[in-house]
Length: 452
Image 1 (cartoon, rainbow, N blue to C red):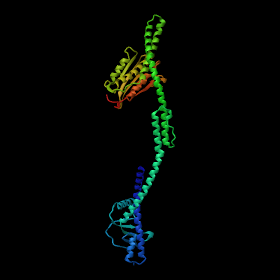
Image 2: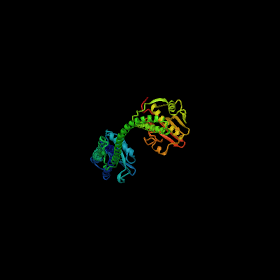
Image 3: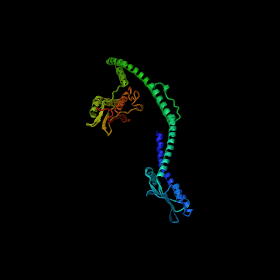
């Protein structure tokens, strides 16, 4: 149907100037016939019977013929004109726009008018020729011509539409339906590699879609298998970690008692044993926390960032320690976030910074700064520690791979990054070198996570 409509629309755009040309040719033919009729009179020395004159005029389709030759205007043939002449058209000097305008006017006006038509005689048969004629036969001929053009156009459009429909069905619709069918079959059992689509369409665009779908299905199937194995492994690790944590907790109690031994060798070894057991217990606890993967969505509230930072500093930086805090957060800065989750993020960053400075044995500073821009709030945490090793930077926010401290699990920054992403923000490493490390938390101001 669309093809038929488009073809007919194109034909209408062609038909209008075509009707104008048909009208011009029709009027020019009337002039030529009138000129031939006038030759019959000129060859008989102006003596013809009234019946023959009427017959010549009827054959030419005009009421009279005026011929100007040698600067003399002469009424060659004439008959009674039923009504006054309504309009004059000069075919010698007329634009295309005027032709179209006059054609549409004659086509739309059903009344029978008498018009004067002026043109150049053929074969240099004079200076000009002028006739008076009726518009009814002209309009009838124009309508007949238009109907013939429309019928032909309709037939062409129907044939074109049928051919296009068959071509689209074969070349486009059927391959797309096949593609959709493959997607539906694959969705029933995405872990079954046999349901992956095999591209075989010769159409370039659809073949590219099939190849992209195959690549996506292959990756998804592999990821599903990997996630299934990781889920099973995670469940096993969680059970082992739970039991191991209990065992290590008991061992930690015994190690504390060993520390009170009077044997100097045992007394020297006990702290190392306690530290090792403590790290093992910490690893088990963080593994269990990460393996649950049950972080609730952020509960958004408005609160003072300065008060939150004060709480974290008080908990993570003891007054008698070698690390001094530097605070640059406006007292009146209010942000919108999950207070508990942001506390955990800042606590993790400050703990890592404090441990990095303490590992050097030298005093240092931890700076916490905060502010806001048009679209976001930001919090910067920097320290004067030794910086992160290159290996830690490569997988800084990847669980079990981004640990920067010996004995660390690498889960702290991974969990912190996940919590910030839950707010729609980002946790970024700004820089890390010999002069220290800086992290930046970006929190958007958008209201996409629900109101407090």
